[in-house]
Image (spheres, rainbow, N blue to C red):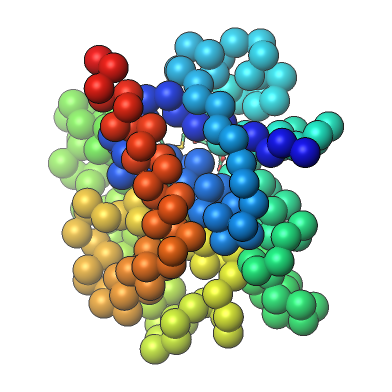
Length: 217
Ligand code: GTB
């Protein structure tokens, strides 16, 4: 059965692997599952055909047989539950890995999204300069707590899991902020994730799309 995901035809990040198809690609690479990618433009995302799969007109989506999914966290969880390598067998360890997945999107990612909004949508507001330090500090609070929990461990729980796929891709969104380097164990954690061959394959695949798009301008 063909497994198809969607991604930006022209990602605004130019191939830095920041869009949320990256976490889905990485999970599929870890699981060793071949997949096809349907590239969509911003216009196509808002058309009925795409809205039928994604009610909010966004990427990524996942389609396999009669199943169509949206929400990157739900897609990664589905992949992790159906293929080996991303969730432990032990029931308690599995539940903890899923907690980390939710933590990544529900606790750590929201203040990071606030920063992207502040930088890319509020830059011309009169209060932008006053707001920015508060946004940075809210992220620092989360990073401090996460850093304390991670300590000297390689991964969030004992073994690498879908929780790490989600958390590493969320933390990578801070790559250009300078905030991650304030927490050396978190920077090293992200680097460990990025060193996974599966991560590299996923990264290269999305970069190839961006490179082809830039050539076709
Ligand atoms: N909660 C959903 C999920 O986790 O799947 C959020 C999906 C989402 O925000 N999708 C974005 C999208 O489709 C792409 S990933 N946006 C188009 C739209 O809403 O019209 C967010 C994203 C976009 C670009 C960068 N970047 O350029 O660095 C980074 C992240």
